[in-house]
Length: 109
Image (tube, rainbow, N blue to C red):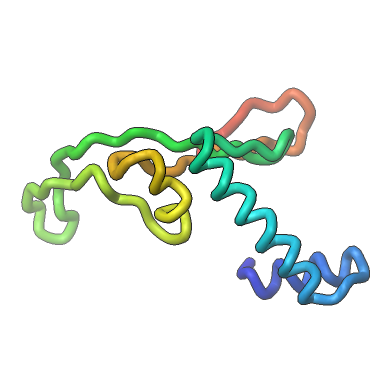
């Protein structure tokens, strides 16, 4: 599901305009980025937990050629790059998603 479909779904579900649904998710994203930068963690209780994690540079293999390559410590992608700027270049965001069933274990995402 893309962002556009997500906005449309919530707009229809809660009988609000699509732009209002988008504004809600924009505000939620802004809050998550602010909290990641401030404390290194953002939690939506019972749904998801985002945590900034430190990563070291390491060796890997190019799957196409089998050649050994160095994977740099700075591998952050997308909008989370800006969210963790305050935590140094060797950190990236990881998420844990909660299952819907009560008492279910966390699964890494």
